[in-house]
Structure formats: structure tokens, C-alpha cells
Image (cartoon, rainbow, N blue to C red; front, side):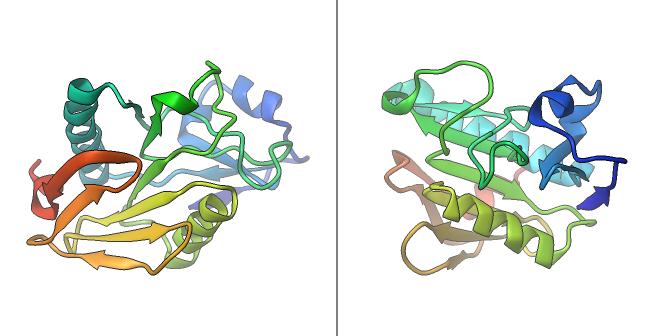
Length: 181
């Protein structure tokens, strides 16, 4: 993530009025560029597709791409974030527009320009803000790190199975399927 320092801290409303805000997040009132590569974008799209297949069958949740803005991180007056993919159970949805509630599952696909420190900070912001399950997907190593609100971090390799856990109980795939792009 690259921090871009405007002259003054932005409000969420000012941030959302920017013509290219989809390429950024708002962290402590400052613009932070979202890193993306061709490969990370393709993998994120693949994950959205696989999650969507399951939700089309069950109608238990709704899947979102990278353009949905969450305003429930730490201080919503100064922070807005966008995940590469996310999922929220239908029973929890009641508000269109910016998402005022944490996702049940959020996916971050690593890009070549991502820094471990920044990714770890974002994961911690998600978890401390009530997001239940975070997948950090590494396209180079073909590994998924599963972070939970409570419990250990799990490292899954290509031959392992990844599940939607409580977020999407019927979702079960080999990790390798996430990387078939």
C-alpha cells in the first residue's frame, strides 16, 4: 500500500466523491493506494466466482467484489476499506450503499507491491472491527492464510481444502482451485 498525503485529512464523504476513489482506501483520513496486479485481480475474480457458485445454490449469503466500501473499520469517520472479495450472510443484510457491518468473510489477494506490515495491519483492523474470517491469498506461493476472529491462523497449501466455515458452510474447495486462472 502506498500512502498518499493530501493537504488535510479527508472525510468519508470527501473520499467517496473522488472520481478514482475505487483505487484507494481511507486510513486515518489519508488516501492509501490499493495494490493490485493482473494476477491478484484474476485470482480475486476467481474466488468471487467460486463463492458465487455456492451462494447461487444456497441463497445463504451475498458475495461482493473489490468495489464495495466498508465503513465499519475502527473509526468510520476516518477509515473506509475495500477488500478484494467479501461475503455477508443474508440474515445480516439490511442496508444498501456503504456497508455499515463487518463481513462474515473477507478476502485479500496479495500483489507484488504489498508489504507484509501493511497487510498484517489491515488483517488486524478487520478482526478488531468484528470481521469473523479473513483469507489472505498468496498467488506466488499458492497458499491461503486463514485468520479468524478467535483461534489460530491456519496455513493452507494447494492440496488442502478450504471451507467457508460459518460464513458459508457449504463452500468446500481445494486451495488449488482458487489459482486456476
